[in-house]
Length: 159
Image (cartoon, rainbow, N blue to C red):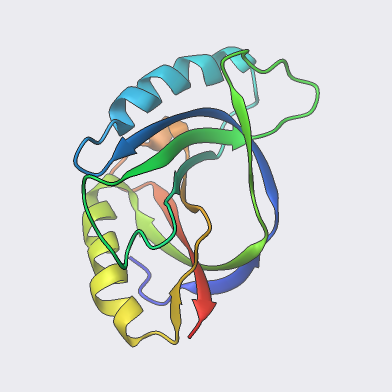
C-alpha cells in the first residue's frame, strides 16, 4: 500500500448504478454488487470500466460511531453518453472537493489499508474527515485479483 496519499481536488463526477441502505453490522455489499454487475455488463461499455464503491455516511458518522447506524452504499459507474442505462439504475453525483487518495493492491490489502488510514494516518494528518461521499475505485474484472490496483478516496478538510 502507498502510505502517503495524493491530496487533490476531485472534480464533480456524475455516476449511475444501484444503491442500498445498510450498516456496517448488516453489510450487504456482496448482495449489492451481485445485482449491479450483471446489469452493468448488459450496457455494453468497452472494458475495463472503473466501478465506484460509494459510501454516503450521515453527518457525524465517525464522531458518534455506531456499527448499527445506517448509511447509503452504492455500486456505480461514470454516466456514459450514448448508452442505454438499465431502468433500475439511479443517478448520483460526487461533488467537487478535497480528497485523500490512497492506492492499495486489491483484496489482500484492503483491510490493512483501512486500518492504516483511520488508526495511523488520520490521527497525525492536518485533516479531518469531511461530510461528503467516500468511495473506492475498482476494475470490475479484477475485483478479486489479489494484485489489482485500487484506490480509496476519503473526503477531507483542513483542521
